[in-house]
Image 1: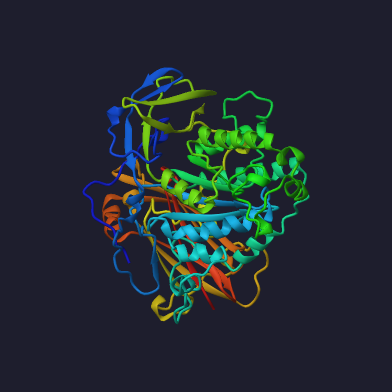
Image 2 (image 1 turned 45 degrees about the vertical axis):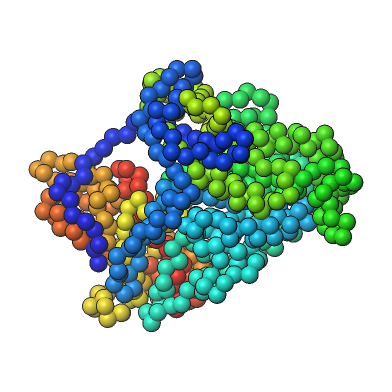
Length: 560
């Protein structure tokens, strides 16, 4: 089952430092086009006015995602997380905000998105969330645009329809939906978004929005690299003043959200779903033949928005809030533009062309204080977007449990999440009693920890893992031995995307060099079992290296 490569030396334990990573988008001032092929020497970075030495320099382009990696052939019923693409760019999240947007503008924005999605470069990772009375995932991260269009209510090709409903083989293990799929509840999520109560008061909508973005930031903090959050909304009720702000609006909850955004490397791209905002009699966005697109002060107020939101004087304030969101996180704001869908696609392209700069701060006192970051270029005529600072917290120090983000493994095991390939794993999934198991008897008692009583009868599934040790950090032990600390998790979801059973196992493996050499060739074997009730289900398998924090996950469909 193993597809690993040989190495001469087993990996050794490595320590980490408080490395600060800054993602920088460079654009031409006149055209706004991304600037590529700059050198490390072109950039200068300072922290609180003191020059810093750049120790990490990477350029990322949107075209990077199109470089396909050929995965090795797998045995029957074996699934793996070999990356489909050599992803060196960003993951993108499209948030369609129905809570803060009039229904006609929601529909218009959705139609625009579907229209322009086909222009996104192949291999671009995209997930879709909606915000109504609560935050909902419509599709997990995927490169299959048919899945996204299908979930948004557009027409998808037959290939995309088949991808959302994978066939099962004779043993009930379906082909894996690597990258996520539109779950059976996707349509319900869209409908709930449209039917969100427009009579909610401004403060209630603000609180819901803040809680939703906090939850989204916690989820995204489990995913490595830059994330572009394209937030499509008719109103942006949050004042984003940055982690170091002492303004009255910068509450403890807002400061927590700011810090989570910074820690998760999330760049926010606010897009005004209303298009060009002017007085109704001079607004080109107002089509007199389509009453749904006529933006009037009365219609805004009638839809539950405050009077201040329905006045021309408020538009400048809202656009300033959008600009602040973008400036503080390294994104870009889009408003006064009727091509809403094109703006969303432009945001994806903008956020996929960037540079990552890393440095170890000369100030080694990590006391939680806010530090300002400044990045500049030798060349003129360019504009830069990057996060403006961070709270200097010692990442290696223990923190109070309440202040920690969502557990990395908990976030990585969410249904439809990004398939992580920091650790390569192969999983052979078979029903108990399959001839390929060669008479292996299932363990006695239940398998897994059900979230609620499982509907009987259940079927036992065997999950035999092969874990590539090349990306594990191994601790050196006396007598020429190595130790690996692993967390192995299984999560079973029903057709509606609700978790129904799971298991989480901690393993400590003490390995001789001979045994490690064997595992380098064939992989570390781990056996797990889980009970599956009748009906369509999704099984997510994950492995975490406790020492380094690296994670590998794979998700597949099951039918019995």
